[in-house]
Amino acid sequence: SGAETLSVAADIFVGQTEAPLVVRPYVSKMTQSELMTIMTSGFATIAGGVLAAYVRFGIEAGHLLAASFMCAPAAFVMAKIFYPETETPETADGATISEEKETVNVLDAAARGAADGLKLAANVAAVLVAFIALVAMFDFFLGIFHLSLREVLGYAFAPIAWCMGIPSKDVLAVGTLLGTKIALNEFVAYAELAKIQDTLSERSVVIATYALCGFANLSSIGIQIGGVGWIAPDRRGDIARLGIRAMFAGAMATAMTACIAGTLLT
Image (tube, rainbow, N blue to C red; front, top):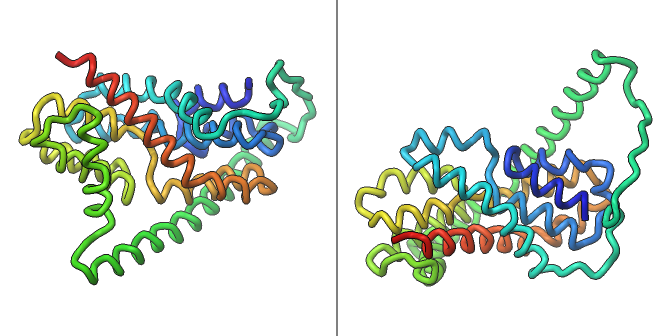
């Protein structure tokens, strides 16, 4: 539909909570499949504003830009595979926009926008704290067995790293990076990649760069519940139910772009 496509396109440039604001009037009326698409796209892409931070780590800018653009259509494909459309979206054949003014002038619009932004940020922050605490609780219990969530996920993702074309000697290292991304976030994962990239093959570094390029992590589920749920409070339950599925669909979208990058490497 038009609304989900516009939101996916916006995800290339802005974050996972800002992109749905572009189609804010339609979010509450979206089908389950449309919600899945905008959530998956948020998990599969990164905001343009954080690219500079990753470049400062020593990650190649060209690959980051390519990954950011490639992940948007990949997210669309994965979302429809994970949750096919069975209903008729409101914006499937275009949309009619009413031009009702909600503000008096520019100053009123600026004040209203600032207030809405504060509410959105506070909502996201509160849910994010809760999800980080939940991850810390899992880590605490795993610590009893001298393990951590990122280590467990690292071993789980090692076969996926191999399937993406990572050489055997680097499989566990890249799998651990993928686990770090899911358990913590891509910022920490890229920082660790920058530290160990001299010990990895060039092929492994490039594929890992594409595979890590997305917000698919446990904390981001909370961010989307808080952010997108604030935009459409009546759909908060649907967003929460789709959270895990959308996160894994987003992770698979980044893995797919990594596979494509791997096939093009010589």
